[in-house]
Length: 507
Image (cartoon, one colour):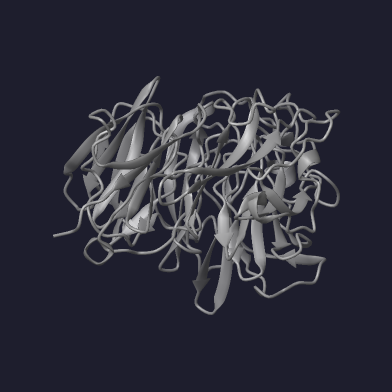
């Protein structure tokens, strides 16, 4: 669950011809989180082996990168680990958020976060920061490996300490360690919210990796609450699963009322999305109890505390799954084992699309893709399913939908193309590698990474009803993320390297 779905890669020079589409400040397309880019041009005429042909620049990362790069205001932001230490004062396993210059890949600053050792299995080794941040104006909002929500200055400490938070040196020190001197290459923290502390009281399992949803003045965040290290019970079943935070102050505005906690059987690694259904704005979330939820979105200008994020509907994705009392997740790999949701729900034309099934490390190898009617209310398990596709297998990926076609990958290495309206399979292809990330559509092409055990491949397919492979590009190390497109450039993050790839003008 360390591997929540991710993104990355590439660049263009002629903005008008290639289709300059702007920054990519959030994971997924705006609020709906659909994995579709407005960039035009081709991004597959490059090589990581032939002297970097077509590669604009590269930047060194760590050893494992689950997060996807975010592009905003001339900066590239990406989470990772500290296997490649840039600061000699910080050695060993840490969580990092790295900031690079968009133009040339120059390293600018980093957020250094010690491991969360007070919660056993709460911060998996070498996972690092696996959250893709969201950027607005000069602020960066991100969840860290220590189950925090942070607001950062996009310029780091190079232009001074903006405050009101002034303890950056203490924040980058492990418990019992003296505070470090904060340098110009360190992050500038504006405010900090600890989701482990009261009144939230979340206890994360494996990783805190929510990609925050920004809506007006509000941040919607998954708390990552889960089971304890024994996997036999939820440590704090009363903790909320979704919280709402004021982006200006870091104050807690609301918590959900779905009472998900008692039924969590492993962890929570999905991220929220938003859509307008008729006259109502709804928040969608795949929870740790195997259900997909719809909540009434709050007034985006709300600032008062003590509010409730009210559940509007809930949908049990897998009705054949066995319920596990008390949150046990050490369930057998049997067809009726509990179902998890790691992928992010995507909103498209009054429907919510979400993958659910076994996760790669626990439970069954079965899984399905569900299309849910978001216009209904209450428990819509029996009335809300429009269609389901049960040929998916395990999948922790988020869908891409364009021109009536839906694309999704599964952990066993397959890409599936379906009719988004009916769920009919158009085609599928086995890449013979593991897939952690999601598909990304750009200018009529579908991009995603696959592989494992050393090397990986960036695959490019035609986004069409008939299967057509456009390119297979070898990468230097394992890829767990999804390609990101911004300002005429594609960014691809492997475990070790961030590639900025120059695109070619569309003819």
